[in-house]
Image (cartoon, rainbow, N blue to C red; front, top):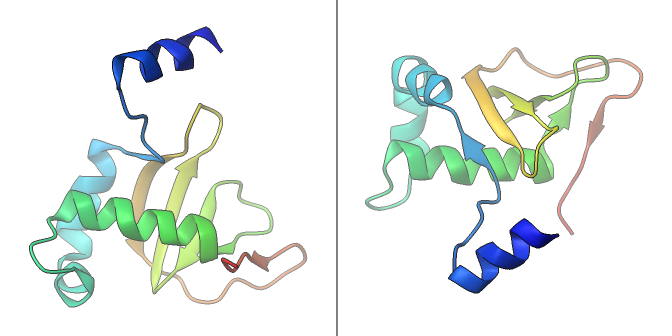
Length: 109
C-alpha cells in the first residue's frame, strides 16, 4: 500500500489501536477505581486504556451476536473494526460472562 510505504519512509509509527475521546471520558467517569488498581507505575489513563484494550482484543471474550463487543477483566469494550486498525469506541464496567453460541475467548499464545 502506497500510504503505508510513505508512513514507513517518514518514520511514522501506526498505532495497534486507537482510543476515542468518548472511551477516555467513559473510563475517567466509570472505571477510575479499576484504572488505579490495574495501572502500571506512572501509567496515565490513555496509556492504560491502550494496554488493556489491546489485551482485550487478544484475550477477551467476544460477544456472539454483537460485533465489536468484547468482555475482559470486568470491563465491556466496544470496538469498531472496519478501518486499518481497531478503534475503541467506548468502555464501561462489564456485564459478566458472555454465554451463547459463538462466544469465544482468544487466548494469546
